[in-house]
Image 1 (spheres, rainbow, N blue to C red):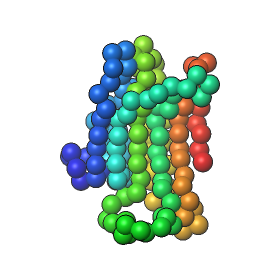
Image 2 (image 1 turned 90 degrees about the vertical axis):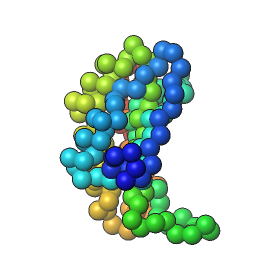
Image 3 (image 1 turned 180 degrees about the vertical axis):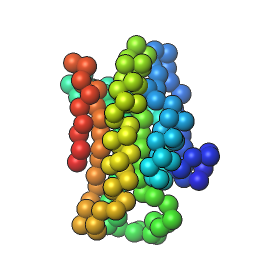
Image 4 (image 1 turned 30 degrees about the horizontal axis):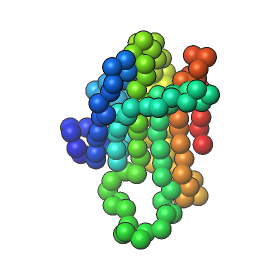
Length: 144
């Protein structure tokens, strides 16, 4: 795994002034290792808030395994799972980060672990576990 973590690739966007990540890489790594979950990719990403939808602060993605294989098959030894941690306004970092540590990070990792064991009907389509910070301050899970 790359960068001493349970992921194949890792990247972290540089953030503009006034933005911060609500979790650190070591916190995500600890949760993944404790649950025995490996990722294809971990990304800390700059977010672009939508006034009506809010900010995506944590997301897990399972890509369909039934995609066309024009460029070859996916390496079966690399997990298709991707986790994104989205940046938030700096003034919300501690508040959102505490909620992620208290509840949501563990729930995201459990979802990721379960994704690895679902049947081929489920794995044949894309699935998202997305935690949104809404303009009214609530964290809302969108699970598709």
